[in-house]
Image (cartoon, rainbow, N blue to C red; front, side):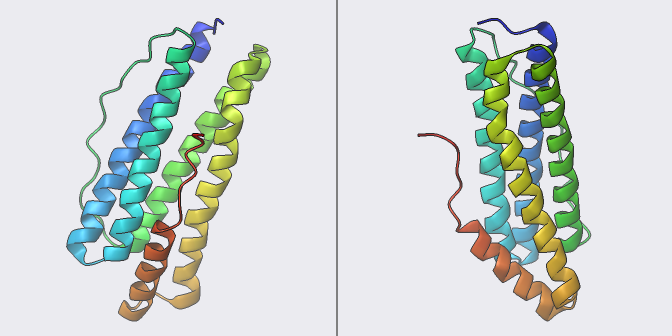
Length: 172
């Protein structure tokens, strides 16, 4: 099966986005860990691995098509953050950027009648709905519970619980 140069570029660009997201979440996990947010650290370590798995899905898809996947270098992520709430807002923004990129690829696939890539991307469309909802829900907790030390401790516990939820990598 052949894919267009435009789709190949979009898929390789997505590989880079996922790799950068993984490193960003790793940096967030590290900051949380040294700041004393053990639950949040566990949550972001899981998120980092999830994004790495997403990157690998794109690499394998390209390779399965006989197209050489471009393994990206990554940007050095921020390593110092203002607060746990700032991290969650940044993570939500990152997920919104990924969602936009996925939707762009879906539009390319539809326009080019690339049914295989369209089918491949469907999982990511659904995954992004879940990802955005996850971070929006955590952000709501700051409004509901508060931003004092006790509230942040509770949010850290919530994030720890969320880190224990198994990740669906789509692998069978």
